[in-house]
Picture 1: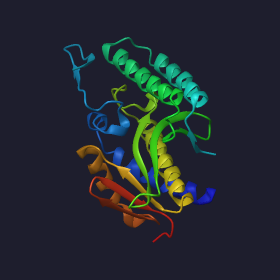
Picture 2 (picture 1 turned 45 degrees about the horizontal axis):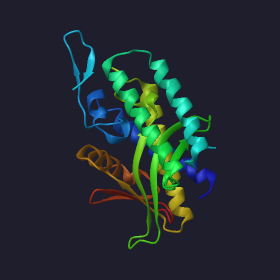
Picture 3 (picture 1 turned 180 degrees about the vertical axis):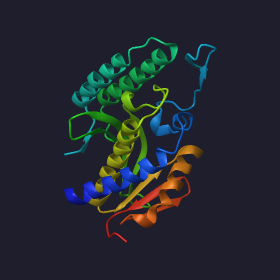
Length: 54
Length: 178
């Protein structure tokens, strides 16, 4: 696979990912394995809107 | 040129320096940030140990054109398996693009994230091309990941390569095009 084909492939995938990811909320994104280091824990907000691990 | 660099003690050290700077720049000392920073250090230390044990041959670092080390990718050459392919098992993204840090996401964040995912998949596809299998299998561990793969496949008509689902795997075949 030459560099031009690689870049075209990367750009096609980038555009597709952007279209999909851009429709997601931050909460939805946090549940994806690739966008979180550990999607298996939850983030809660306290009464002062401070985030904390739950 | 963008590339997937095989991990070794030098590249993981470079990555550690870059990612620690990013964590420092986040600059708050909330419980969440402290926890995520410790998770990142655990991830990096784990890979340092893999390198020390000489057992990190299936781990690569995505290096962008500007030299930034933006993700760790676990990629397996399965060319000798029953279903010859390259398998992308997981991606660990840099702290700057970790969705757990920001409260809101902007255009640049989403574009950068899409760029990293697109680049890692394209480079892994090139590995599949180079090893003669022309098939990249991408594992979706959770329902959320499988849903993301489903959304990608729904756009497959616009691609000049084949993409489809097979159980928990997203398959990309780039060798011959459509």
